[in-house]
Amino acid sequence: MYLDTFKQLIIHTQDFTNWIYFKKNTSHTIKFSLLEEKEKIYNSDAILYFWPNSKYEAIFHLKHIFSQLNKEKNFFLVGKKNSGINTAKNLLKKWVILKKIDSAKHCLLFYGKIISKPNFQLDQFIHNINWNQIKIQTIPGIFSYKKIDLGSKLLISTFEKSITGDILDIGCGSGILSVSLAQYSKKNKFFLIDTNMAALKSSELTLKCNNVKGKIFPSNVYSHICKKFDFIMSNPPIHKNSKINLNYVSEIIRKSEKYLKSKGEIRIVVSSNIFCDKYFKDTKLKYKILKEKNNFRVYQGKKY
Image 1 (cartoon, rainbow, N blue to C red):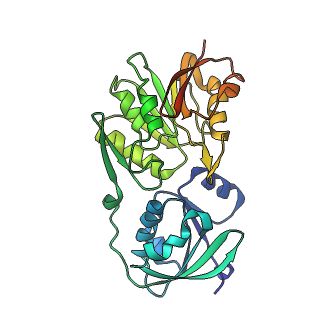
Image 2 (cartoon, rainbow, N blue to C red):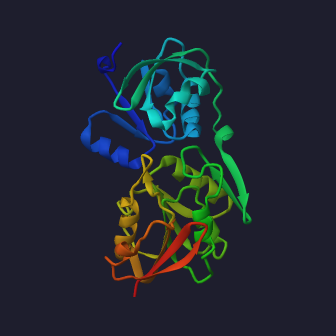
Image 3 (cartoon, helix red, strand yellow):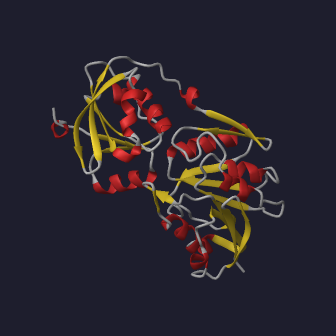
């Protein structure tokens, strides 16, 4: 059978930028959520799943999908060869038998025959971390799913009581930056943004179990930001498809001036081999390297 024979197509994504793109460029049904609705999976004739770089994320999604599929349904799996898709046969062997049916442009396409339906429970995939008197809960698909990364730890080590007011957490991930800063004052107003639904849900869980209030919503950097802040903080991604991509870092810094109040401040942590001076020089912010350790550095920029 061929995929172009289907009368209706539902595209499900966890990425907000993909959701915006598809909404503008296709007439198909587009869904932006953590997991696809059970009814949509059950009533579908076929599933095409794009293998991510994280095996934890793949197992999370596919166990949910397989829990709703019966043996008569068609399942296709596609992904880049360097994404780890070749491990899929072994990782998924309890639920599906995979057969390679095509290979082109560094990608693989598999057809799957469902052999059993697993019991999916979201709680089984929520990872709990206790660190520095705070609780962190993460969902597969976010950066540093099972541990606290050194960049976040370094940025958190620079926090102090003087940071108050409206706080913007860009690329919030697990929510660790916001709950750590809330230890100094929960009166701060926290705004947490990310493009990844798994990150937004993880931040929601983390804030809830630490009794911290905050507004959590999707935004591609400042795309859905309509106010100014006293403090902007970020531990941004510097890779895209396994290659260094500094577009995200550049946009956070260069546009921060527009979203900072008078005497507002931005702090951003990056790998020590990434130099952000050229981005800060495109603003009127007074900047410096605030701290450097374990191959990471924290830049501080102030608006006057």
